[in-house]
Length: 204
Image 1 (tube, rainbow, N blue to C red):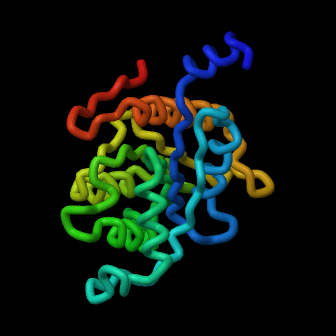
Image 2 (tube, rainbow, N blue to C red):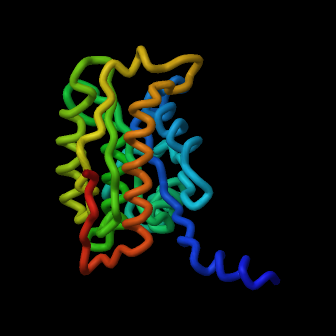
């Protein structure tokens, strides 16, 4: 093995696996299109896998193994990821039921949630001019209740999202670049994160 190549590999930053959680299940979801646009722009050191929260309605009677394989797989995917990137639409001034349901499943068992100390970056979108800021507020509350570490970034809100989609693709380069930079900072944080000593290098 070439010594220089070996040294370069040792100096390179380790890869980071992030999980992208979409807040919408529809085929032409704007949230999913945004996550796919980020996925396409990330370098080889950051992998973003997208998960669709197709889960049964939360039922406390179905805890543990009774929760089913879909719930177990969902929790395992969050646990295995270095961090989460959640992209949500805004429904009726709040987060969609499918996303809240998924986070309720992830919150259990009590005190041992896979969300605890998990670094999370939030993005929102809406056809209107507010870009889903009210959904972000609700999402913050749910994540904080589970002791997730929310990236202290400027809010990433994508307004007028319907006009920024072409052939199912999110084409707003300015928003993509802004969000990708935040994802890269999330990845850098995940590489060195210690749940007992969390700190962040914010954007300028």
